[in-house]
View 1 (tube, one colour):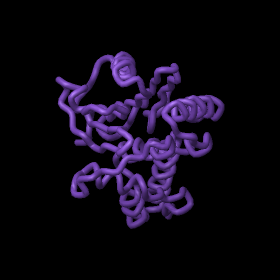
View 2 (tube, one colour):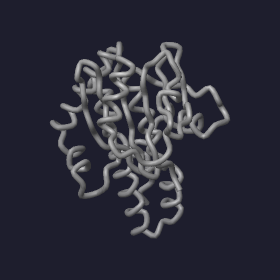
View 3 (cartoon, one colour):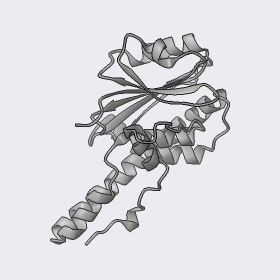
View 4 (spheres, helix red, strand yellow):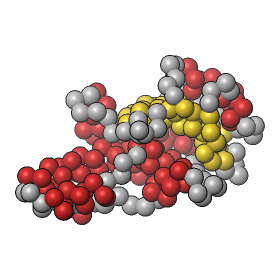
Length: 215
């Protein structure tokens, strides 16, 4: 089973873990500029309310990624100046989130809102880079699904194995890539941890669709 819970990014001089009590939380990373990333286990009922509370408590932008079984992630951001945006990484087929990713105008608007959020956080970032990061999980998984289907139809089981081997299986990797695009990349000090393993994947490029075997 994958991770089900929330990844919470906030900037605070005090311990983010203490602020999240009584939730069961683990500190994933803390930067020198006081940005902290924490993982909270389990489901949380009111994510917008939670984000608003953290914005009020920290007087800084906040981003929460609600992860479902390491397969999908709903990203919700808020800030003191009201730069709010929501999107879904690897949205389920036939869902509103998947339809939104297919709408380039809608995704560009979300990316522009995310750029404004990042600016309030003190980081000047490029809209194109943010847009790519927000759409990458859906693009990669659609390409991998098509490559797997083509290889299976061709009876090329070596190719199907290669597709599975190259595919990124944990949506948390794509969440971390969004943080990179927003200028708030995190490094994991515990190099032997699972989060460090995912962070390493986040900094490695995904195979391009043309690089995936198709039989």
